[in-house]
Image 1 (cartoon, rainbow, N blue to C red):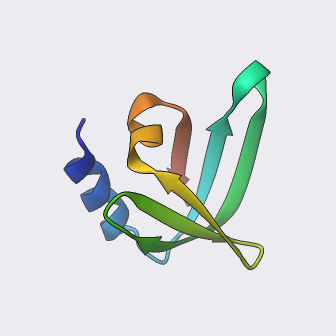
Image 2: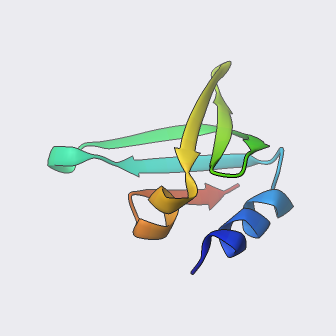
Length: 70
């Protein structure tokens, strides 16, 4: 998987609901349910409870985060 494929997949689902699961250190898991808000060259953002949360494409490729489209 490369970054262009990830960008294309996210652009196709722009302004749709998503759940982003973040796998942190020491088995800490955070979930954010929001709207896929903006796409930038190196990051994408979701709108979660009125706050923008940003993630990188590399986090998705390496499995540090998972994205589920609702």
